[in-house]
Length: 381
Image (tube, rainbow, N blue to C red; front, side, top):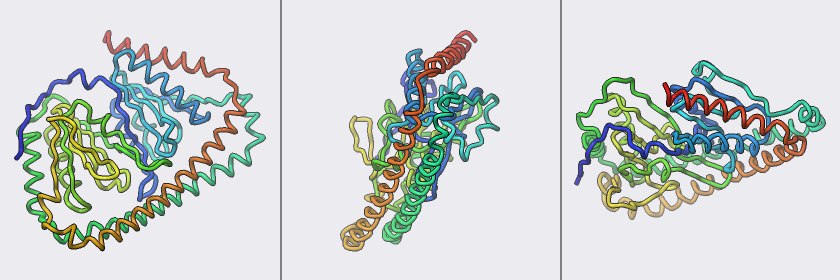
């Protein structure tokens, strides 16, 4: 039974918090970058050049934590290739952000943001010391790239195997019923509500990613304080289709919509959030499987609702074979990401050994002052 909930169009205190997600992904379709949509409304972007992952992450965390202390909403962009690193931080309320230079690859940031400032974290002394390691750094850069390419090839093969998984369920799927269920949830969650007075923003991101330590996600963080719908099911049972319909309906009604793509296959969706109406609907199957924790949480089981009963049992042997091959390929691919991370650590060790601490405090002070100024102008404007 569908249970309607009240739609609240006002921004609540729960929205003023820290959000964590990925804008880059190690996927079955290669390296993917979705930074651009998160730059909507950003007027100043600081780009870190040089330095180690550890140094850049420390700077990003410092600024982000300071802005959080001032009560502003913070978006931390996590790095998919180094689980201990950050790709950047965005403070939407003041129109400012910081990213690492690698995040701009495949991005149109220079066309989307009016003021882009490059900050070189490598001092002249450090640059001189690093010249002695130029050949080794070049070799490591090639190894990092090769390991990533091997991972992408493995993920592509895993996707091919995953298609076999989907094919079994698709032939026993009631698509008409799946479409009716999707329409029911569009009516339940959005009804006839229309937001007027502003252009709707659509944000494309990843809720999780393939990392050197395996799959990681930020579902609990992103869905905190929202009415949550957990979509259960199997491969090919209409989970992404339901999410696509919700996203399209929210856009048509003028709501800002967060669309989270699958970190394995970015052509598929994993979650849709419309904060102005207070809901999150997400694919709650492995590798981001969760279960209801509050009375407000609800399950939408597409397998139970739309697939011929007994399909799991009838095809148990074939499904087990597909699962075995799929998991093996995913493990191999994750191993390549772990190799890339080991090379990244070697690269950063060379950079840090050649670097002094001079200038870091000055960078932090300058950035803090600039972000504090923008925050003050926002409050007084």
